[in-house]
Length: 321
Picture 1: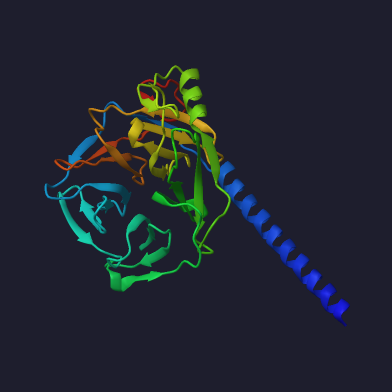
Picture 2: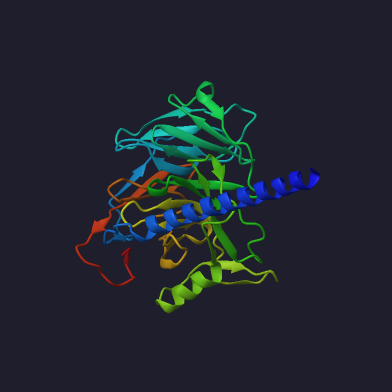
């Protein structure tokens, strides 16, 4: 009898493992199909000539992340020391503040999915909030936490996942970075990274394409040399190309990857136009929006997505494909 029970337990365990393996394989195949069959639109960004620079009202505290709510409104996350979100209307230069989390929870990142906000605190607990986005309309949904934390996230619509830039520990010695995901269909973090990348590979890409790097970094021996640090401060997926854009404020840099982590573009941001670039998002028409965090004058720089009927080469003033 005991042998039969043990044998049944082994069979059940093997069946469970096989089911999970098939499920994982099916999910991976779906994501790969979505990435390889995305109908990309050719175009480019002229980072030297923005469409507009919107200076936000005085009295508005600096913010560290933005996302497009609709064609008129943006939502921004307030910076360190604050725990609210700012609903912005750049056209009328007006704003309102909402506080979706109770004061004992510190907001670390957020994204909008349809009409719902997904919120992540500094322990990576997950909450959802409905309009009017106050604490009474917010509920906790997570059951487990990842082994990393993140202060920037974005929504990837075609695969219904949230992408994260995990915090970087010891960036002077650790040159490896990664993008992780949260599966909205199952409300859980995915243990494997979407992709990993090496900062040295970004420098190599810049060198091969004749792009000069003006940033400095500190080595593990505390020497200052020309090079990139890449501490990600924002992440967004281009709705027209499906490429992943990662902003590094410390380097004034934008790095672009495909969905498999292959570097497709790199550019440095003009410090005159982008004095402290911290937030990154896209409008539905493909325009790029970058926010500058500043106590005196917060601003949002909008760069037009210039659609092309066929690809255009060059990586000087233009940025895109």
